[in-house]
Image (cartoon, rainbow, N blue to C red):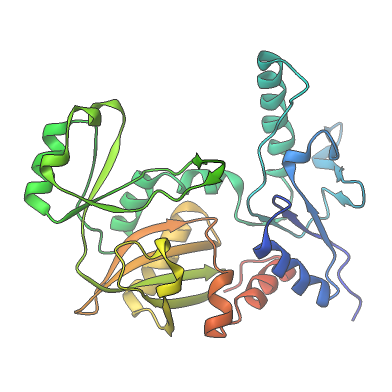
Length: 321
């Protein structure tokens, strides 16, 4: 069989071990891959695209020092974690203007490729990263959602904690946060009513009823494939110490599986990394879904063929069943 010449585009930063695994798998299949970081524009990345005058879709290419991708031929685009646009040689105002042109120009072209399967589309990622939207969609799709309050009113926070305690605090969004030059994870933490003071008024905060959980479950959906792994750690926030983890592949209940696909359809996603709290009674409580979540660390201890499944999705360029 003649190999499909259409490339798979992988948009991510230079240091992305997960993307490395997927690209290696695609290379082993003789699948053409063009990898680039949109943040390399304009230093080592260029783009030219044309539409109109009889052309009904964008025509042109994206070019790196070693690869060229025909915009009309990209079969699928794996949008991972590209770095941001930077123009250090310009003053602040000019750099801000140039970054906006790059975002809406290059970014807009990459979001408008004809016949391309996005994993995931960058605009859909942006929509799904809003926790309030995710929680509302989860409830509408049939997931169990813990009582949650988002507020900057101290009295409302105290009342919520007294009514629904024990309660945890978690960040609504986690931008890059450095301490002594090292990126930090802001952990989930228990909070008491008497800890709430007027500093709450300074911005929005998310408070959530703590689930009495037996374990956590990470469910990664890749097109029509579901990989669910139970994580036993004994921790309130399993992300704080991976050395405590025990991993066990599990099968989601049918109602949870239906809700997973309903949630992804709601946001127009083909990939999602879902987190659940598993109660002692076997109830799956939705915590969140990350449209760009990590998954590769789960493959070695479980043997689940996750890299192959994602490569399958990108290689065929269609969602599947």
